[in-house]
Image 1: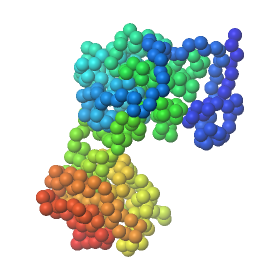
Image 2 (image 1 turned 120 degrees about the vertical axis):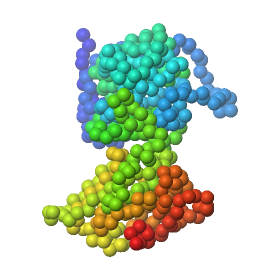
Image 3 (image 1 turned 90 degrees about the horizontal axis):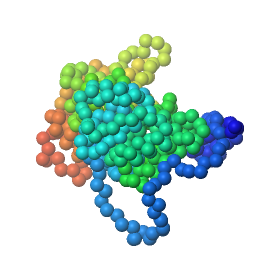
Image 4 (image 1 turned 180 degrees about the vertical axis):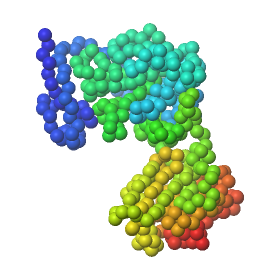
Length: 455
């Protein structure tokens, strides 16, 4: 009988140790060692063995023949854009997100819309009946979509060999295990070995594989960090369960840009692609209301207008409260300090609450001008004109710093019918505004911007 052995494995890099240590000597991370119980036994075979034993020899760089990769159209505009134009044959894509956010719904809805490809959907968490009920709710079907419920990697490769699919879906990678590793599914060793075998299969056969992964309490993808290094693309599916919007971000992409962003709306019958998020993120009834400012932001390479809401009130207790939803709280405190020091508004004894409408989280520095304008609007109880939007980064000395892609922001505001846009003065260099139907108001300082907005 084989003797059980307990080892400690780093969840970040996969290094092992006979005892627990606080800091990993390989990657330098702290508190990443987890205990695994395994049985040492001889391993005489690999999990996946290619059918063709090709002899590989080193080639000079100019001897390597390249061609334009023909991407697979997923018939999902948002997902295609985030992937860089479609799914690359032989690629390994990892989609991560919190429980219940809609990862399986996104993938199942996408593959059911592909009519010209054979799909093999491998589920390690749900039964075939559950997937059928979800497909019926999505109101879509695909005759070439095969469902199999399996958690053994060896059996999965048997199903792949018999089915010969064009696209493989594995939901989720943390439930898959191989017999060559004597540890529980989801452990560091199992996730590392299974993903490496799946990568070998994808590269040698040219079959794209989409993996679905869990998120741990820290917000990162569960399993070893090496999992994100193995795959070609890492997509993060995020959003608040109390809001209808979902955002698909590209964290890593070997075949495209990581600046792309996809926005979906969760509905009863599945996810709907949001082609123009600006119209949905702007409420239509904020005329005459103080504390509301419209910002021309860019998330990734996509411009959209978003509503910022602020509430300033006298502190009921000794210590004033500072709260920000969808925006960095530390940056908001910095902007409040700029208002106090450079402009002269006394906000030290007042509560300040900030909210980005729609449940989105935006990191664009060009939101600064809209943030301080909404705070000042609420403090003075004076509304900002509804046809005015703004963009600009605020420096510590109170200057309005230029932002990137100013032309895209202005065109987005013009398309949605805004009459005025406040922009940094230095963004006017080399920019022709004569053909535009929107009034451009350049400002240099925060005080100048406030005079234009509030008179």
